Length: 398
Image 1: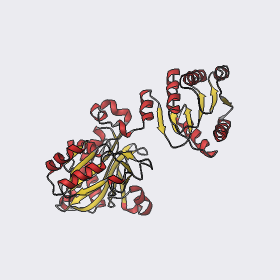
Image 2: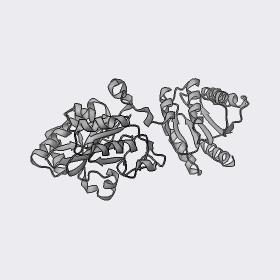
Image 3: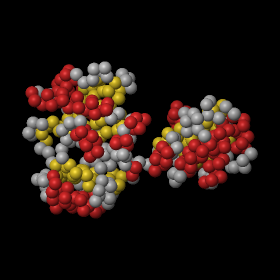
Image 4: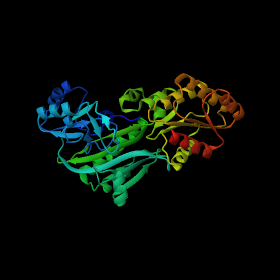
């Protein structure tokens, strides 16, 4: 689960991280009071969306201006004007795709005198099963670009969970960022704070870009992105309460209610599969035959008829779907349950696009019999390759 910048900073502040003062704004009428509370003389008005590249982004609406999604303001009137332009407008960045995202929240923050910018992040390293830190002097840039062009400017290290952060971790960060004296001490303290917050809140990713040194000689968290392990949210009702469903795909929200693993994609062939590996293979073979999957959907190994019905409804709710491929290998999952779920869903929501079903495994003959006797216009497939070719052909013919 992702949260907004201002929410991430509030959590980090609880652990003692140095963050700037700021006020979240949800209505234009709140802008003046927020600006007065911060006092100026410099304010930063930041769009709050779950996507990076906000500063370089562009609004679709001409009325929102062309200054991007992060703007400096030197007066209260300028703050008010920026809030009026940005709130409710659609911001397009490198991470939102061409559709962009509507800005429903803004964060007005006090300005900072920046001397230097750095990059600092923490994430779960699956190779070591530890929390690892990534540090770079190239703050404000996409870390992927830095890794590609100047990998020598990136330093990584992991923390042993048995000991937690030790003094040498702080020294490693200070050395990587060329910090000495009091700034080196601040760096060590910050690493300890971030690690404690990461572990305590079951984060999966914490990115600070940029981490700055002010002209007054202080380290400060200027931006923060935080993602949480969704499997651990039951332990953190305070974190779960921060969820902003307007930032999520409605179909993904509906899928989560039925415990379905669903991710919306940009293609036109809907997929319903059991097992993550098989789902990936199904998407790959659709691409192999020249089309794009519309989703990743894993119904799991123990799906019920109701669960399969819900999955089918979610797929058909996508207006981009021009064909559906059901690919089930029945191990724990029974093919007859899948067949019953598909039939129940088709009868409820109708079938307006081609449907190819490939069943194999437990109760496969019964499953095929249920579908063949249903009277539905369903195309049967013998194996995955056959199924992919048939759904691609059917969609192209339509």
